[in-house]
Image 1: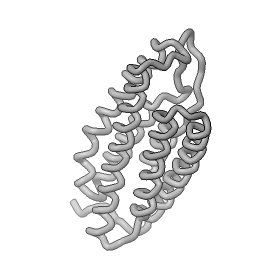
Image 2: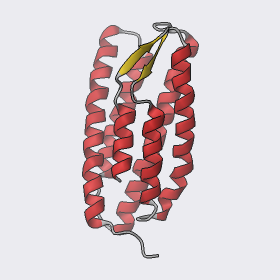
Image 3: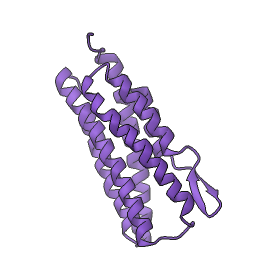
Length: 178
């Protein structure tokens, strides 16, 4: 689960670099989703149900690569309806993928009768989703700023919960018998 954590850490970190007219993240989301893919493949040894998420993780690698190219080609500061729609759809695809991961962690909790913190992750994910939408779709400066601050806090809470889950999973969920 360590690779899953570090992959999502890379996806959540948003340090950007100006490249020509566009911008790109110093650590692209695709690199994070590759690590998430590897982490999910490791989790399959603990619970085979995580296998169904591996293909989705690979599709997030492709989607995030396309989004990175879109960011490079879109002029900086140009917010058209198309640009906003692409940002919103990409963000929602990522949140839905996170939701699927959290659901699978919850299923593993039920099967193994352990608490890995999926409820906390669900709450943080809900706050992230709502604050992301507010920060990107409501064009009132105070709402944008508040949404961005809340989003940052929710990302931190999600990552802390996932880090705790990583430790608990290692301690309480042994690999499946072969």
